[in-house]
Image 1 (cartoon, one colour):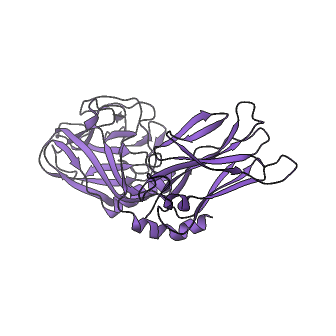
Image 2 (cartoon, helix red, strand yellow; image 1 turned 135 degrees about the vertical axis):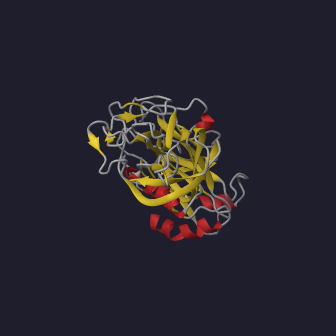
Image 3 (tube, one colour; image 1 turned 180 degrees about the vertical axis):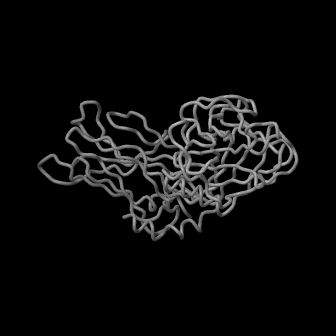
Length: 367
């Protein structure tokens, strides 16, 4: 089933007129001070500092850490086209300095330490510090953070204001990896290319900044997969957990089939396909779960067939959604439309209602 999808994926992506864009706010951030004791941090404060302070500071060098939850925001199987870091430079030293972004190689923490001061605060349990990934129990392999020496993106930051790091092939590869392998997502480290010059600190807003416009953001341009599944099936009291599947590539006009399939459901029961073009959902519905946000349409009401004369889970259904879209029965089903669909099967034995429900599919109609 999915092998058919994989074979047609490249052709579909090439035909898409535009990709989707999502803007994420950081889920963790902090500052590393080169305190010899590794006891200075700012895990929950409103600012993040990058650069080198004056010569009177006992821990003049600062680096920033950032992490974004990519896997929760993009459908699995998406293709990332661009990834742009956006930070608000709110105070510190002006003058153009190159700020590099590097992929972090190990997990790190964001503890309760909090201050707006450039000198940091006493590290709290779980904070990332110059010496620790998690203060004070787990250390970095190298002081100052474990990061890839390859620069993912670099930008000359000069005057106060919002700054956009350019999307590069390396930054895109970082974000794609965070999507495909969420456990590898340890975020980025920010540092100056030349950390030996004093009075070069740049202060940026963190996710705790009062003004939302000052919080770190990651703007991702991506193409979602033609089909992805979501939501959870509601089994019948007899133990039938309806399964949803698919075969082919969704299209608004193709003569080739794209079938949405139902299996492992109660036999000899009426079932229908519910779909909508609004959004995903997870709403209680007549003993099952409605995974399609209203307004919805119901089509393809027919028996699940299966074994005669006994109750089991041999029921199945199949519906060619491409043929339905091409028929122009629903003007909303055009190229570029996003469709959410699931099966609902009659289940009179369900004491809490009258339907068993499958999981759902999110599909993107090509031309």
